[in-house]
View 1 (cartoon, rainbow, N blue to C red):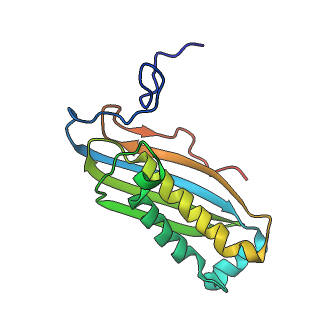
View 2 (view 1 turned 30 degrees about the vertical axis):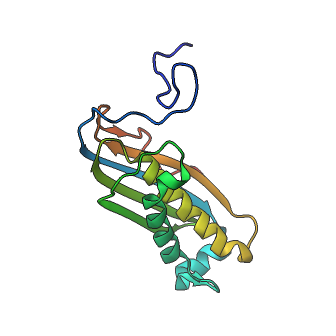
View 3 (view 1 turned 180 degrees about the horizontal axis):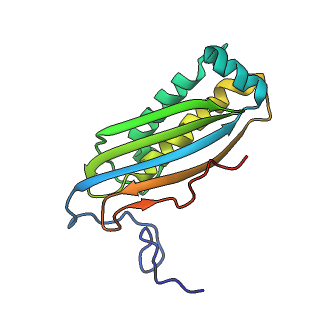
Length: 167
């Protein structure tokens, strides 16, 4: 099946490139992403009880790591434009045997903030993993996914499935 869509980060000759934003006007951009970390019942119980393990308050440290990651996304993803973020929020809570992380990012800019939201959720999930790995080795991360984005030429997009990520 042939698609009319092109890869914007590839030149006509197929080499990597940063998108030219010169002619674009700034507009309000926002994105929400999520990540799940399956920590198992014992670790989840400990996180629910006191929020932490020997290394500290896992959920709070993961939240802070996610916010920092959102702001540093262009240092990690080669073709991302640097953006001045107006909002970078990360929430983390224990749901059953998993940690659910939701990131929200917005700014007024010439390009979207999906990568910033996804990076925030990803790094927060990795931080949870790092902080609890000494208590169990069977931890799994995923899915990590965009839930919605607003702004720009493509407007609003929202994930159609409205269910909790599968176990």
